[in-house]
Amino acid sequence: MLSLFLGQASSVALADGPSGISMEEYQSRRETVRKEIGPDALFVLKGAAKREGVTDFRQSSSFYYLSGVTDPGVILMLDPGGPDGEILFLPDRNPRGERWDGLRLYPGEEAEKATGFGKTRPLSEYEGILARRAARKKVIYYDYRRVAVKESLPAGLDTILRLQLRGSRPGRDPIRLAHSGSILTGLRQVKSQAEIDLLTRAITITCDGTREAMRSIKPGMYEYQIQAILEYVYRREGAQRTGFSSIVGSGPNSCVLHYRDNTRQMKEGDLVVVDVGAEFGYYTADVTRTFPVSGKMSPRQKEIYEIVLRAQKEAFEIVRPGATMGEVHQKARDVIDAAGYGKFFIHGTSHWLGLDVHDVGQRRRKLEPGMVLTVEPGIYIPEEEIGIRIEDDLLVTDEGYLHLSAPLARELDEIERIQAEPGLEERAARGGTTQIRQVR
Ligand SMILES: [Mn+2]
Figure 1 (cartoon, rainbow, N blue to C red):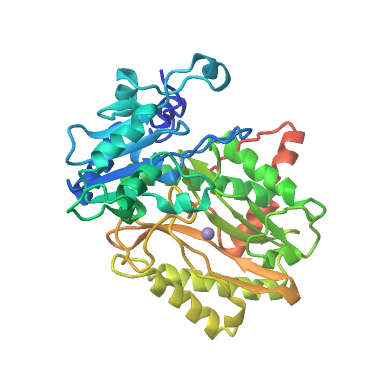
Figure 2 (figure 1 turned 90 degrees about the vertical axis):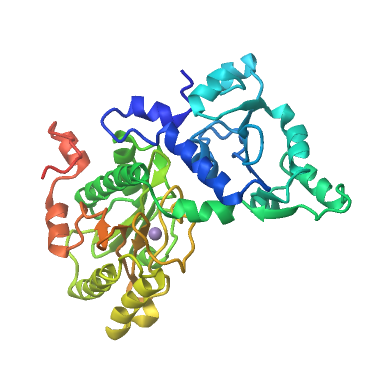
């Protein structure tokens, strides 16, 4: 079995979880792209390249979205008017390479069966096929933003540019280049049920991790020790990796929005901002809680916390089909402004969530059922070492929203109760249960 195809492998390895995305769903996504671009266009997307010395390869999110294929260095072509509709370009079989990297997909029937692509061809044929097919098209969709940040042109782009610049088609309009993201952004913005299942799983695992951190934290611990507990929980519960670098910011670091060093020793009286997300089946959570290292907040910390929580709750109520992210932000801003802390709220309230933590999507597009966004107001007062952010993940539904990260407490009295429970290491030392999932 070609186990590198995660869409299939995950349904085997993770029998108790969602079965991942079906082959049919990947096929229907490609069909949607073909319909949207029409027969005059060609769509080309290159997967992420293998990086030397980096063992944890992750496919690019858009390539994964259209294929489920997790092999490095592969290319897909969608050709709506063409004889086959789609081609997946794969490297030739390399028995020596297999000794290092294990089995990969190779051109042929086996890969077509495993991936659901109508046709596979060797990568060596890509340039020739691209040149022939592009010559008949008016538009080529390509990820040229990725090209701009790479030192060398990826395979095929020079062919496209040559066709354009040489005016190889006298009497006809030049081929127009369009960004592949102009099609994919809109599609990725609305999640299917299978995607929502994976996101829910990632979020549930993340909630379990932060709850364990709440129980385990103590003055004297280092931020990285809390990070270790969080990430232990993620892997133990089947998450493949974190969706982004875990942020554990205590004391003055609670006011640093993207703090990632996690090196400080925490002390009595500190707040800690834990902004984290497990990745499950390529989908990532993004949940933030702020809690006291000692288990009890000071009256002043409580006062600020309650303002942020109120802003978040009121912003939730804006989330429904037809509303915009801007309106959600405005509500949170209004509450914090009214409380007199407007100048300490220094970032936006929401972003899209999915295959990427800051997922693609148009900010101005009205909310629709199936979209997933974060709601994360914050107040940061560096001179008092009070940084408070509360972040939750919401799924837009027909009626309003579903609070996907609801399993993790936000109310201070509930957080206090969790913090009073014995932590992971304490339970292990006692020889008691290290059961992580909350018993409800
Ligand atoms: Mn976020």
